[in-house]
Image: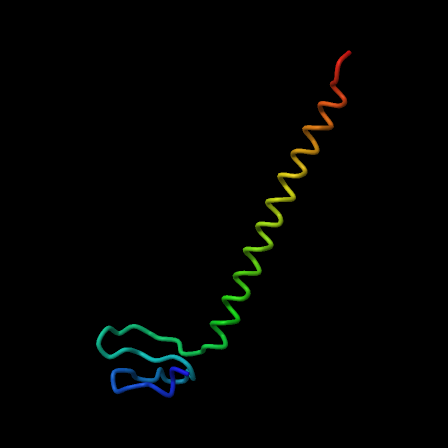
Length: 75
């Protein structure tokens, strides 16, 4: 875990368990690995859902097109 390897270049942000400020750059660093892993998993899930929805939309458009062909066939 990153928190065990903290050095003198990082200052704990008051009132925050996993946030540290880098003395040199002023950047805020989050050391909450489980929270980050949960975020990544959630993001991948959303991407999968989006891809599935896009596939369904394409399938529906294809079905609509085929139905139009059938209903407007040779007369």
